[in-house]
Length: 211
Image (cartoon, rainbow, N blue to C red; front, top):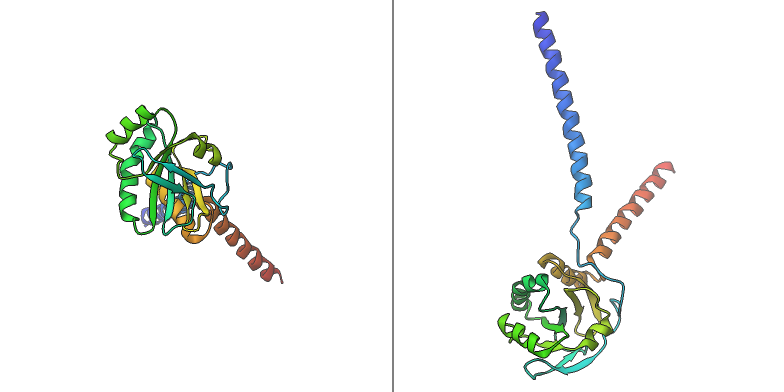
């Protein structure tokens, strides 16, 4: 009988210990989730801001086709700043081609770079970018103050900059589209708004409880 009582007590102690471990792990998972919340394109606070009118340009692309950037039109424009020597830029090219197809109803993708024409022509052909406008101009990058690559700027149908940022993955690229849809400059701004709303609700609940 004594052995049975001791074993039951031991079993309950183990169960309670496991329960505490599960609670601790649940808390850590919550903390980890907050730390790894989906991150959008990282915006460098330089150049024209989201919500401002885009600088306007008129150029001929590498194929000699006339191109207009920043003007009002029937579709939005995604300016993708890249370099032939940028490995991440090359990794993103298949993703951009896929996005150009799936989002073709509302979006045009324009590649932008600067440098020597022969190098870019070789890159343009090797990468199979003939279907896309490819602008070679230092002026565009200077007006947008692009300092790191790959970088993207989303301009809406009215010629207004809606989102921009460094792009290293499909998720970051699509975060620009999400930012445009929900009316914020970046995904980070959306997350900050959500956190601020939660804090405001919590503050009001605490105030009501004290009252």
